[in-house]
Length: 276
Image (cartoon, rainbow, N blue to C red; front, side, top):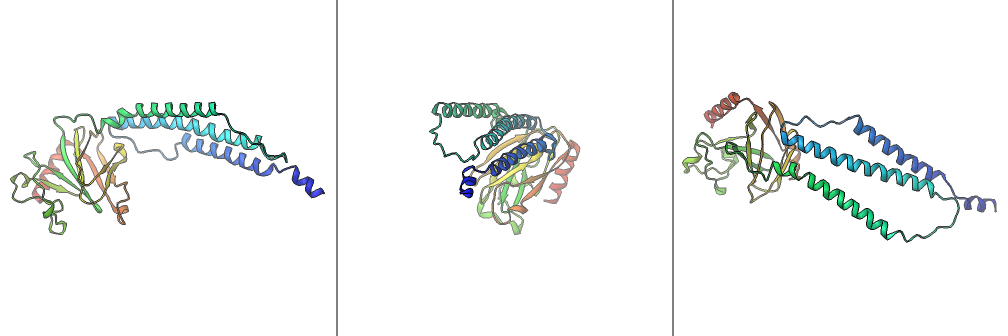
């Protein structure tokens, strides 16, 4: 009889422990973000600043929802803990479900609209007439960057001529005079404060071009030429990585973006042209 009475009173221990853990989770998460334990690298374009502002806005909105939801869950776990009472069925409140679903839809649609400018600036706005065009070709598991040379015109590519071991990883047609001065490198070098248009393509599977400091990430898709553009405003070296799981060597696929002065860029082109 005593054991039966003890069981009928329920046990508050698990509910209190879970509510406490949820509260500690919220506090720990708030500390990580408030203390900026894992800050992003400084942005190097004006568009990257827009991306950062949109990220902060999204983070604040999602953060408020996270805190309220987890603290609400902790309260509900503690408030409706087992006291030995019989379970009670509740059909819920249809009006409240419609309301919070509508609010969620409006909030996230608003965030998407607010972030459209930051997303479109690198992709859908016309690039500057004076932009430097550079072709980015991805393949397992390397990047190749092609510059059009002094004539400003890319040479013709023939897939049947692709032969990386022989020094022709892109399939440049030797019979096309426009390609005689093309420069192919394994790293990307651009002048500071100069518009750059990248033309992304892939020879095999879906790859990706991502530079954290640019806040720019774009897939390279076989059969497509995808343009993106940026203007870097800070000299330095930045890592280029692939964020698509493109095969067993995916983790080794990376390169470097070097942002240099105009004079260093001219020397780079001269040096590369001499070595082609």
